[in-house]
Length: 429
Figure (cartoon, rainbow, N blue to C red):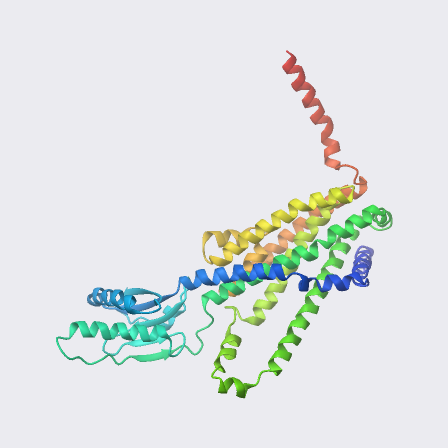
């Protein structure tokens, strides 16, 4: 191993153990238990996203041109008589080729609860859930149109109901998962990367950073600190992942299938377990971890680079405030992108370097395309390398200058003073 890498790993191990091997780390590890308020805020946001997506649900009827007006009139009458108003009815004119109702249910942009095709006497109704109110409502519409056309008695419609055995998770649930991914990555990144500021403030206060700078190249110090903080973050995530899996197994072992079956609720747990992101749980969790690492490296490098410019703890805290506000702005942008997939806003959030990890994690929940994530990882890795390169330079300048004042400000001060003297002389004239 080269001396540079060896020094980097020595610094990483030192910082990792200085955080983990302390009693206060247990309090930090249990911090999520004290963040119920933040969790409630995230749940409220996810609920709003689900409600907005649920409002975009629809029923689709593919009919001939002559059937459009009677079907629209029947829909207007039945909606007034229904106790709970059904989803919006979208009427499409049948083309030369038969429409594929399954393809219609999987169209992006809104939830499609049921699709009706074919003649009203024997329509084909494909519904997302077997025996749903949406499918029955479409059958009622077909009957109502037949009743209007018949002079006297008429033969009721005989619909053929089909349910999607693998219709997938609703768009509302997938958008909620996307919001959850954005919220989790943002919260963990801000919570864990913020440790860089505290550690840097402590080491600047007791002059440890100057001792390290004299013994080890500053590039190794910077990268070692970043790597050590990443190790702490991975340990934090691993701990809570094991807690979540263990809690889920304990909960599953306490469920009595016979009691659920007797209560008629056996299908509800199965329905809950069938909820999945569009890209699948394995890919979604794996790519989410990759996006978290990239987001952490971006924010951690910025914290270290900018924090090194300050000379006191107060200055470090003041410098970290704009970074935190900026990250909150990226969270808001990514949240808006998660609620509007496929729009220009979502595309911008996925391309912008500091919001890209959050927005792409949300996209993995609503879009089953996987190759685009490899391109996104490469794009973000370029920006991580660029930010680390610039932050190392800032870190080096801040440490070597002692942090008493910003190095670039000292260089620019004579120029600013000369400009001020020139302006004063011009005003005297």
